[in-house]
Image 1 (tube, rainbow, N blue to C red):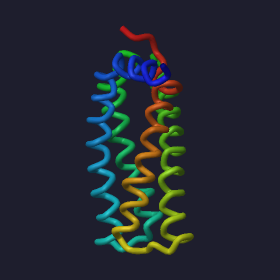
Image 2 (image 1 turned 90 degrees about the vertical axis):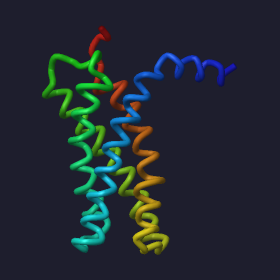
Image 3 (image 1 turned 120 degrees about the horizontal axis):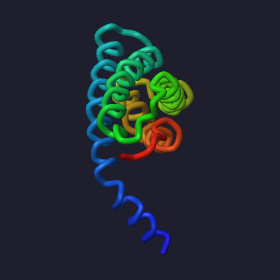
Length: 145
């Protein structure tokens, strides 16, 4: 019964979820590329590399989600919306960085592969779920057209 309700709720959101996934995929490629650029080529710490990569990917995600995914639910106060978007992304970043910190510093998995798994698979998955719900419920709250 609960599974049926979840399936019905998701069915009505499939176009939005597909757009969110597409924007997220593009932002993920940007995030992954910038992270590895700074982690491997520049030689920065994994935390700094991840912070920079998420900041760049956030700009990509903001544009895609505002003007495509949630375009029918944009508010008229884009400044407030941008601040809320940024706050949701900062909280999402904290989720990603926490996963990376636990893996790298607490558990001692310090290879580039381990950093990528903890940050770009586990952390990003949890952060993405949080961001979708945050965007939907807090950021893009205008009336649907």
